[in-house]
Image 1 (cartoon, one colour):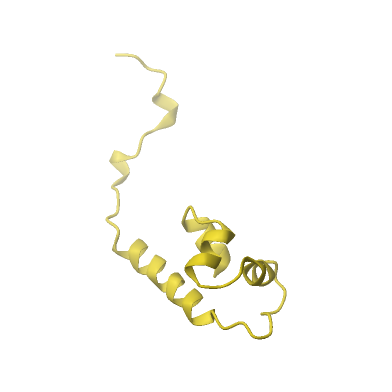
Image 2: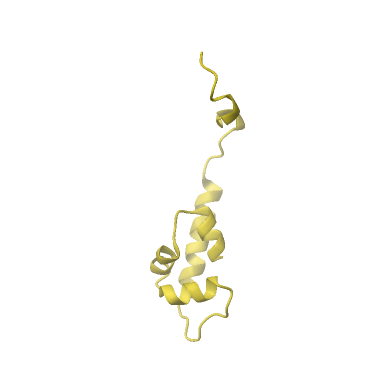
Length: 78
C-alpha cells in the first residue's frame, strides 16, 4: 500500500505519515517490510488515504494515445 502511494503520487514517506496521522518511524518500519509496530493506531487513516488515491486515479480522465507526445520525433523542425 505504501509502495503504491509512493509510486502513484509525489508523496514522500513523510507526507504519507502526516496524512495518515502516523509517525515517520512507523511508516518506515511498515515500508521496509518489517511487521506493523505494536500500538500502531493509524491503519484506518492509511487505508483511507490509499482509497482516496485509488478513487482519484480511477475517476481521472484518460488521455488518448494521440495526445501523448512521441519523443523520437522531437528533433524534426517544420
